[in-house]
Image (tube, rainbow, N blue to C red):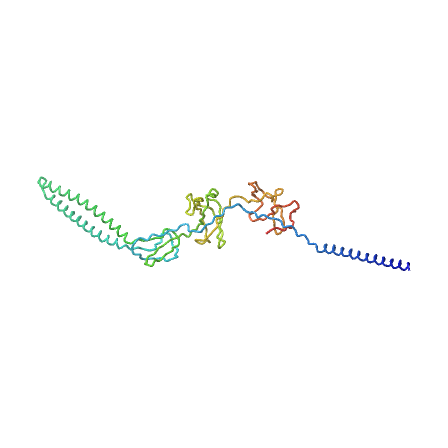
Amino acid sequence: MMKNRQNKHKGISQRLVIIGIGVLAVIVVTIIFFVTQQKQTKPTTAPATLTTYQVKRHELRLSGQVQAVRSQKIDIPEGTVQNLTVKNGDTVAEGQQLLTVYHPDVQQKITTATQSLAKQQRSQKQLDDQINQLKTSLNQLAADDPQKSEIQSQLTEAQNNRQDAAASVDQATQELNQLQQDLNTVVKAPFAGRLYIDYQSNGSQSITETSSDMEAVGEVSEFDYNDVKVGQSATVQALSTKTKQTTAIDFISSDPAKSSKPNLAKYEVTAKLDQGFLNGQSVSIILPLGGLEIPKTAVRQGAVYKVVNGRAVRTKITYTKKDNMYEVTEGLDSGDRILQSPTKSIKNGAKVTVDD
């Protein structure tokens, strides 16, 4: 009986050992499985994204507008417009006849002046006749005739009057000639350009001429005034069409513009333009004020790493210190993208992932 109990106890112990070994094996297998899965599913570390810096030239941008270099409202004197030989939108040459104006009031003056001149001419004719008669009478008298002195005096007076009358006739003739010239006024184009005619409801016309030459007109603030110089290079770019032209500043006003405010004075700036811009078009006037500026951290041993087609290309540069930046004079162009802070591990030609 005792032996059976011992055998039974021994059997239970063996089974417990076997179960324990089995549980331990399951635990080990589970641990190995999870470790293996973690190794397989561990994410691959993405390459670091490097910060870049776009090289730009320090510049001043002014808002502006395209305007004709010359714009003039053509003066049309009072009177009756005749012979209007142009129409709205016509291109004209300098001195080209546009119209004539007839002046009825001048015609009345001409009539009066003509009558006055005729009267003075008659007076002059009468004096001529009187002088001829006195000369005849004087020639018929004997040398010692007592009337000769009196007739000579009358002749002298008549000749003086005749001189005055002749001067009056000359002046009246000149005045009449001037009136006849003023009877019709010829209106001509003051310069080569294009006409804009506004036809009024009362039948009159208002004519404005603008030159074909265009210019960009902007305003610079008092704080930037000393940075702008006549002859300075400038780029004018249309905001709507992206038309662009390199030109130069040709005028800087010393008088404040109408848009100036009590605490901010502005001054007009102009630059000539070629064809391709529209009158009234909005533009930006861009003035470079210095060299290309880059951060100091971008330079390692006299070179930078320029990003070209996803690779870091080591590029030697010539530069000088300017405030907290470096001003580059050789090696880079405006618009180039460089690594802002390259590390020692960056190699020439290495593939890099950069920010946009």
